[in-house]
Length: 231
Ligand code: CDP
Image 1: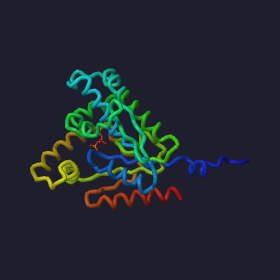
Image 2 (image 1 turned 90 degrees about the vertical axis):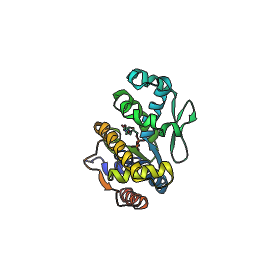
Image 3 (image 1 turned 45 degrees about the horizontal axis):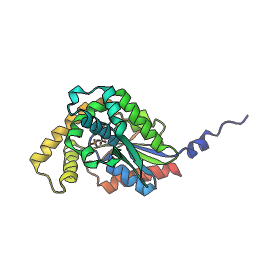
Image 4 (image 1 turned 180 degrees about the horizontal axis):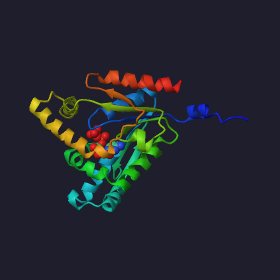
């Protein structure tokens, strides 16, 4: 009797590197860098939640009036456009990075992320982007709900103060003051609480605490892990 060669089938499956973690844990910048080191494509699932939220805000500026059907209808203006190494979420065909990263979207996005059909809408798009390509995907539930069979699963964590500092450095392009970091830390901790149900750590995920790591160090660890399973 010949047994199915599951091992080699496993090796042929396009590689998915799933990076999850809480707000501002460095998932997207790390995922982008890892993708470029490995020659994979980067898919940022958070950008799709942000794009659906921005579209909903354009249609109805008061989130208290949002319904799941309304958000899904508004999200029809969102497209995920492939680039050479990544995908860009666009609104009405136009880049909208500033709008997606702005404070109006950041404060309303967790509300949208709780809507089950919006989650299914995002997941379908992320899975379609990964079809036929090796990808590095980042989010909150990539290694659980979206790619339970991902061959590399990482969960990034970092101290909230450090996360707040990094996020502000990125936003201001200067060193933030202690008061600014304290305020941002509060906002991050509040968003972590709102996102708690959506943030799932796969039991087999490799936990990396980046508080005392440079970005290069965390990228190197993930790249080394991915190379070891690709061999
Ligand atoms: O700012 P940060 O890097 O934390 O967030 P993001 O990756 O841009 O995601 C924005 C928001 O989308 C999060 O606060 C979550 O509410 C939601 N999200 C989610 O629920 N599941 C994902 N897989 C990715 C993002």
